[in-house]
Image (cartoon, rainbow, N blue to C red; front, side, top):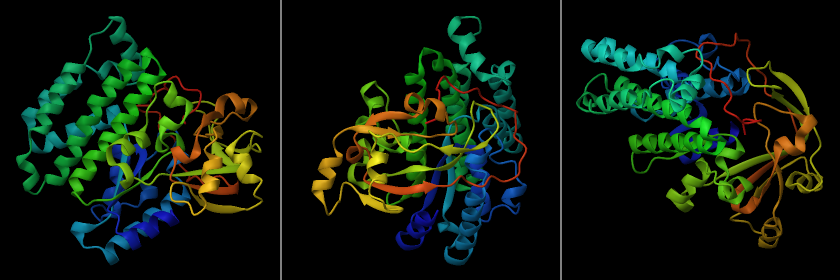
Length: 385
């Protein structure tokens, strides 16, 4: 958060985009840009598993800072935004589209209810829709959601009038519905296909936001290392996986500056299974053959390590030898850590800079009731990298 604040204050970045559901983050966007009065801790935003990932004291403090900064330092049309890139909010996004159309076009709302009704039987478990669709037991809803998206995107004229911001939100939700429907259909083909579709969705959402903010816009992205580091520099890239970082690098080249983070030991907020309760877990000391162990052997508590613009090219060259790298997501299995959380990578080709914190501590979650409504199951992965 401190780095993000500095980039906003000193380099005039335009918005923050995070690995979170669009509707939840958009509520925060309304709050920080002074379009809503509700306090973030009173909202239901980020109440889906894993609640602690974004619904924590550290994020709340940043949100309050950003709201104050926008009021004091930015004009209404130039306030720093806050958006979510992920696609797990299928039915919440349907609700958002319907709410917009109910207000502005009752006939279009009726068409939307008819088209989205194809997905209604699977509201409790959208993954089962995907299985039924590819097995032929239930018809695909692809045509329905695609037609609805096309209809929403044609509503361009309204962007020039008062409800343009509302239309912008509704269109992004319609796009999310179309992408999420496909995600649940392809997840049964294998984890690589669903992973690639999800990260492509996040990248394309990022592109749409950059386009909306203009040709000189700049964004700060908060995601796990495995989404932001160039996948082509990891074993996952060798197996056909791509990610947001790789797509950004291939599209924007040196305009991208990717920062990774690592630790040796400490505590982490994580669950033992998808939809499981949050635990504060002890992070095991790093593997002897890992980048993390190299950093730990420096005996420095914390440091920034430039990789692509290093003043010590010999060090960067030495770090180019592939090593193990640890990834801890919302699920952590220390008992099977080598298999579950380490993978092969080339750090200088993966990131432009590395932040090292030798001993880390878990985020402080806000008191909240976890929502089970519209809860998607975890798609195949052992961990949410």
